Length: 360
Ligand code: SF4
Image (tube, rainbow, N blue to C red; front, side, top):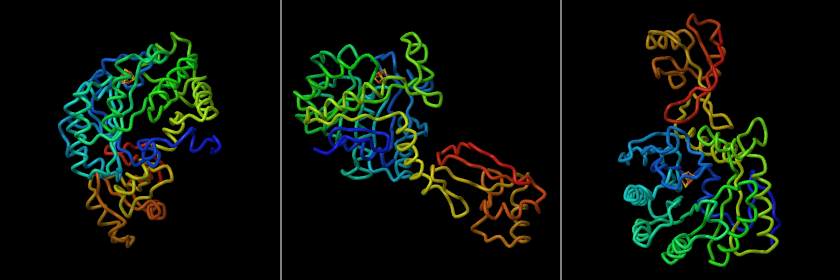
């Protein structure tokens, strides 16, 4: 039996499911089908912009729910090998979710892996539609009250999903004080021959703040929104699974992993596709640009090209400003009248600027 060890801020007994393998590479598009959900978990981390609203997002990009072209374009932007459909609860908009799966499968082929997260114990008719559309993997999320003794609808849903050849798992947060309940759930799932359970680190968010305070949960560190004690519970459960040599995978995903590995790898993939020759991609997947701010960018660009013999591919006009390769702008900025800066932007659709350093 291989030794249990941390890798990339995650720890697992058994082989992580394909949805997680692709996620780690940043090769999975996160498709939020809706912010609607009828489950109402007190710890729901969804942002105020999404929670309870019928909105759709492909990664960080908000799209009209019916705008499948934008979804496909975003998947291409990160060279996605798969898509994780999440919410809210995608089962609330089941036909839309089924349509998304069909669109992704016809756009990228059967090998494009699709996993679905849902708080709903899906019925046979719902599973039939999802399975016919090509769903590869499902992750059920029962509320904590159902962990100790998994309710019948979730048992039936998991068994029906497995009967249809869908890789079936569960996904829950590791809530401090619930170790016994999680172990009981692991026991039930192992007996049902479920493939995996993912334990996520419990996190503060703008929307669950009050509920966390009420339950006296506190931060693990000042720089993270992970909850103290969550990782400890998860590691104890993973260790139990390992010591008992369970058949199912028990997998813990830390909060630091999501930002430090998964998001960074996805940004890197997107940066490779959106950066041009004059941009610099950082190891974090952000883009460094040299910019000159002016009311007449075309004229200023022409002057710079003539005066400093800047190669054409190293300069351009974009978003009403002149953009120049940062290493060139650093050399010539002191001889330019207009304000010059090095900026750092996310490679996302909105090119969110996170840093700006003046050069002159
Ligand atoms: S099932 Fe998921 S999306 Fe729905 S309330 Fe619970 S945590 Fe939030």
